[in-house]
Length: 393
Ligand code: ADP
Ligand code: MG
Image (cartoon, rainbow, N blue to C red; front, top):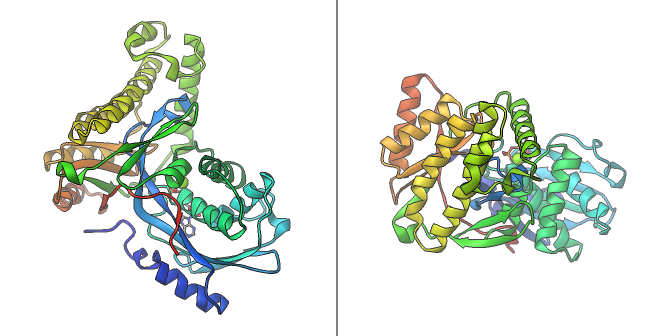
């Protein structure tokens, strides 16, 4: 098994962060906390259309050892970065702390903005969530730090509010315009379940995902394709969707019923917009169908939905790239029941539903196809639906 976090895996344990904490601070941590990365099973570019998503949390996580400080400042060490950063109350202004420490300062800032009193702290963190691969290492970092500081300061913050505060950190302190999906998954997911999230109401529900029971596993493969043009293309897609909703006279594309899709498409001015709308409306329907088959204990029936989602992203929403398409195609030929790109697009990861125990075989087939086509080597692991943010000790 090739881990996408290879080389950093050993720092994401309670023992590793505890030992590093003792070295940095000279005493034991008050506790150890963790929050996971996530993968989106289905529901791509539906979030900003007020629609549905279905992520699950990964085993890969950010682990934090921490204890209060008495001087009202924060010091944080990342074992992955081999760096220690400090900030104080004056730095709780967006833009003041930059780089990776902004994800930590931004969490303190969001808590303070919400009216909480946050105690100073020493924090040491280690992560085995691959960074920048679309598996949400950023939300894992925010949610791990948030759950740590909430406990250390004895605060009462409801689970969904924790996710909202972590999102606020990312949107307003770090400055990345993302939806609630990542932080909701990292905070609210439960082991052996996916999380159904209605992005309009923020209602959530656990959806059972017992893949092992069905003789299946879910391969997560990082194509390692560098994302290019992501911000511009993302903005274009978003604008297209908003314009289409305005033409159709609905608040968001979520309000176009799938059985009225053809009539809606006829009212749109051009073919490109029709394809964009068709992706979003059918993708929402596929999420609902995925929830239905998972609820019914038939995870094998997710496969055709994954396939259809990929085709829709490739042909209608046009957010895939050749390496991603090659990975999906090869995975299927190598025995995957179904596969799709996951994440915002233009690179990143694919997921494939494969017979239990066959992830390596499928991963190796993709690696061989990549080598033949002159692409760099992918990395992969089995994605196991895991628990959200929690205290470990
Ligand atoms: P993704 O969330 O898909 O992994 P992002 O670009 O949103 O990608 O977040 C990656 C950023 O999160 C990194 O550039 C870094 O600033 C921060 N980060 C993630 N993991 C760590 C870590 N272990 N230590 C320090 N910073 C981290
Ligand atoms: Mg991120």
